[in-house]
Amino acid sequence: MSEVRKTTEAFLNSLNKEQQGEILFKVDDNEWRKWANQHHYKRQGVSFRDLTKEQRELGFEVLRSGLSARGMKTTRDIMRLNETLAEIRNDFEEYGEWLYHLTVMGKPSTTEPWGWQFDGHHVIINYFVLVDQVVMSPVFLGSEPVRADSGKDLLKQHYEKHHK
Image (cartoon, rainbow, N blue to C red; front, top):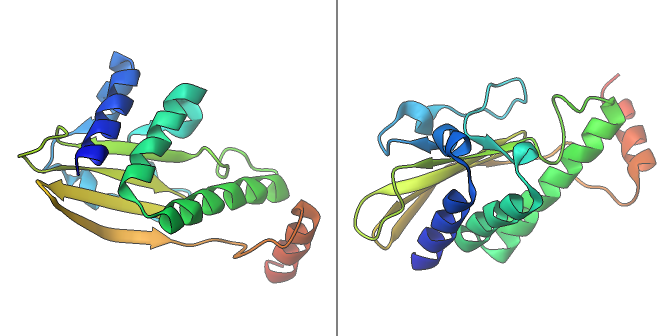
């Protein structure tokens, strides 16, 4: 758990005061219960769209430290497919690779409860830490399209076939 705590602290330290105000919640805040798969939902926290490249990489380090390699790959693949969906629909306000938000509940600690939430279209991960125990629930991983064999033209054909 020390790696998860350290990467979260490094990410938080990279943020300015305004960003820290957006991302930090009390450990018992109702924010834990506020999540939705749909893209219309008003998400809380700091959007990856609003982060610098360096901050974004530190945010990914938070995810990498808490997820398996397969879980991280799946999460990034979904984010990339969400960018493809934005291109297909020509809608970069509701879809896109960086329209994912990170919140931190409580203060990263070795003794007190805390955690983080990663929330966006087709990806929701709630990660609660208590000393050396983790609960990841609820978690939602989905995608539309489910897979891409190549380029956005193939995906556009798939999307149009199934959404007319």
